Length: 58
Image (cartoon, rainbow, N blue to C red; front, side, top):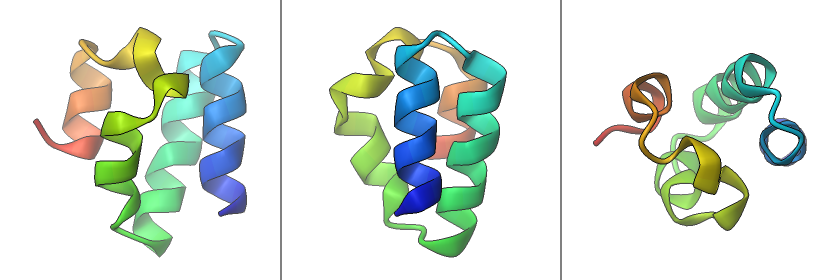
């Protein structure tokens, strides 16, 4: 949960690269975070982003 929470905070701060790297790590540890990230409002700025979609699946 630490990596996912870190990714959320970074996304809210518009730190895209950091957020995506933290999210990748969170998903490596728990693949269930893919679906959680898709529906989490903290990632609203990244929803249409190609790199975000590559990580969470379309």
